[in-house]
Length: 200
Image 1: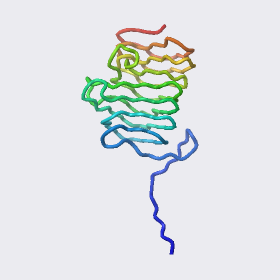
Image 2: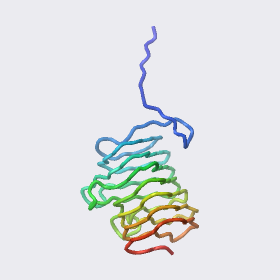
Image 3: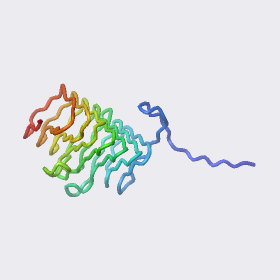
Image 4: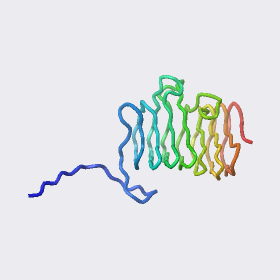
């Protein structure tokens, strides 16, 4: 007699990558460390820790509201490490639980980053570039058709590649957008009502 023990894990087809992915999500408390393929859909996540997409990790948020639950500025942060991939799509929103307690967001060189039809708010705690807002070092980046508002600096991109920033609404940030190097493609954006306009 053969006894089979079946462990059921929800598997879904990731159409972007063409292979199976699983939906795991963050722990109740502590850091959410993504080391494999994870897809989260249609939920609100309150994160009591850092979000780290490590080398080889691949995270997709579809219609997800992710709230960083900082009790002081910069307590928790989002980092996409070299070799990691982060997709924020289909009406996802990243913000903070308390609008006066901001988080930081870094996309490191050698990672993949996509934002489409989504929102980013309450990001950035200092005028020092490493924590200013959405801080991008990677050149494999597309940000499109999204709302970026109420951040310290809407987008800071220091990578050397040809990142694409198109058809976004970048508004009500302290600084709008800063691309000091590389060959970015920036077009059809609405960039208004920022305290400072920064675009070399």
